Length: 96
Image (tube, rainbow, N blue to C red; front, side):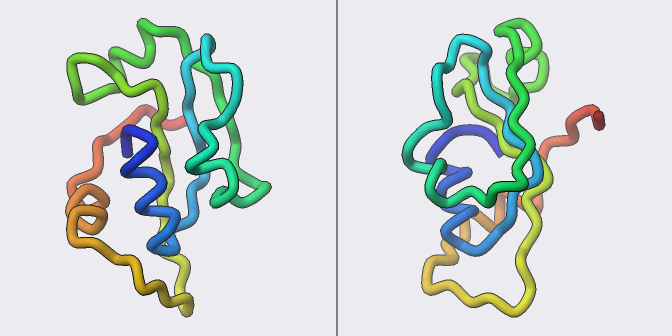
């Protein structure tokens, strides 16, 4: 899932993120998602060229979340349909 807003929406909808990929030039994890992430999220830094290869948009947003998994048994009042759409039509990234 690409972009701070979509990752934030998924985390608010009780999805757990396994990995976060950011540009090497980014100083910190964006504040919008930092407080929503669990401590076990692996954070990886990528160069601009790798981010462009992995991104589905012309200008990559600089943040990609991978392994977003629904946390069973938790409910959230925030479950917009576009989060479900983007998670079901998720991009396939190389595994590490």
